[in-house]
Length: 206
Image (tube, rainbow, N blue to C red; front, side, top):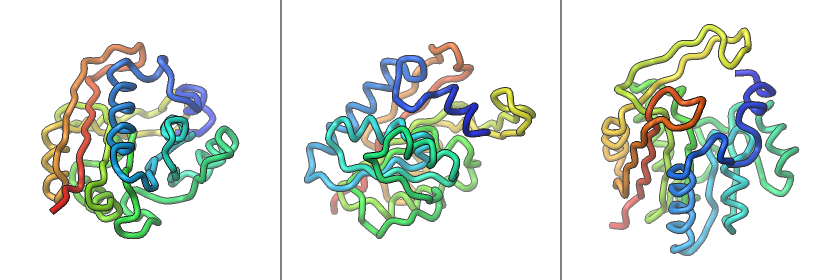
């Protein structure tokens, strides 16, 4: 999706236009879980314009934002110059093993097909320290793909995936993460056509 059109749609901050009450509550819960530990660095993986990174920074966390798109990183750096944003992709994160207290993938896996989830989750598990937390948000379904010939009014095609909450939880457990909570809510915002899924998992202490 073209960066300017996407940013016009979602903005550069978490807002009631793009996140419902449950969504924002899940983000707050994640922040509180991180703050309940010895706080280290937290990553917004697939950060886009830095919306979640800014939210977590405002709540006192040490945040790094990562995205594969240079255009998105440029927007994020302009909107949030006090946050460190770097290039990185979900299955090859430029972060040392065990280097994160937490990671958020806020709709970052909706472009990852089911057969590649395990690879991405394995990388997320690698960068989490023991006792660290991972938060995922995604469009929920039964694993079906949705293809748009012109996404968000652009001339660019886009395929996204509506993952099953149960499948995502199972894939996380396969890479050694422990499910802390799962949430499935009905579509409620104007732009939503499917349920929304949220999972918090942890790299359990031995």
